[in-house]
Image (cartoon, rainbow, N blue to C red; front, side, top):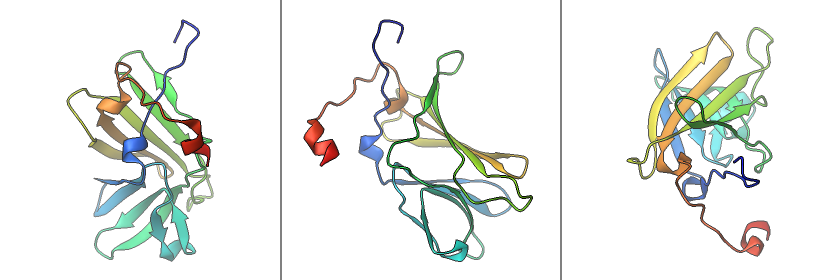
Length: 153
């Protein structure tokens, strides 16, 4: 933070929550916050954090990312529209052979208590973006402290 401290994105109140956003052509992106709560039976019976589902057939078409127990840390962008951006490279290989990539961005919005999906997008055939707003992403939000024994036991 420029003063020897750290900024902290606390999504603990949303852990396990399934968020989805309409993508395109009858497909939706699904994301379970900080958990592998999504089942993707068509892609090798995978438990994943994020996927693309076909609304017409109710099937999982592509796995986007796997939760790695907090090892993936977000990048904080403070220029312009302040947000936190998680970048995942552990999803399914795309049809063109390229490694899949997903960006999950959390934007600050003091008026959104839980979350609001801003949009689901793709860049080309293998880079996927899900933009979400919440007051938890605001730097003015005080982190909720808890005993470390609760976290690590």
